[in-house]
Image (spheres, rainbow, N blue to C red):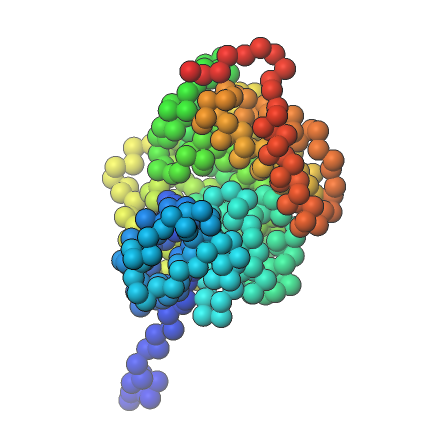
Length: 404
């Protein structure tokens, strides 16, 4: 006999309202691919970009969000309003991005702004109790304890989008903190894996921007080349999973198939594997706890000949040690390291400093700041500004030649 429950249609969840901050970057465009593939699950409420108003307008014409935000007022003045569809309301400024992130109709905020600039709107989303799909690792690097305390206080959820942290998150599901011995973040090693410091003294921006595996924006690509990206991920993992720095390790894995490991106290190790495609961790953060078919291609086991692993060369890639130090010390260190690095990467891309000077300068600025173990948000923002100026003034003690 068929029961009543068997005859009722399966309920379909209400589409989640989504806001994408940093929609014109690589994570933002990949997020739109995922939303487009799952139209019954998501409703796009708004998009936010900093300066690329033409690309933002094209995204609005294609996806028809209710709101669009240009956070840079100068770019907003240059924007041609006729390029935006009639059904999309254009807002301007960082405050507008914060407003979008906290709107009642928004359920999930994808925080994909590069750098510390993403902190304000992410903070607003957490303050409003939203689920935040976090691709902006700098939010936790800068404000670690404050951000996690705010999320807990407001009942907000922080779900990782970085492929490494998504892998750890997936492997930890169903396990207690006491079960975990350590987590191991994998790193591709960037374009300079195996090179010595002497090899890297004259590296050019063009060489550093040639990542062998991932297609990313210039800042993140340079961070990958210096291993600063992995240093920041160590700090992010410390706060995201409430780990001690001694429970975090890094290993080089150039194929970028294994995205991270979790080693448990009994010796078991769980890893998450997939092709190097950011749409998969983005989709998992958006659909969690559900798993659905999406736009990501599947792993071809028949074409998988080998997986290789190696210990990173910390003497050459000194940024990695900075990450572990900041994860251990906490306080004001994350804000200072992140800001100094953002400025140093800009200087390197402008050919004002050398490749190895990025980590050297960050070390000098970090060592010279007034450390506070329990800073306020205002203190962190002030130190962010201070560290950028210090890095801009920094010069390497010895005579050096800057790459041509």
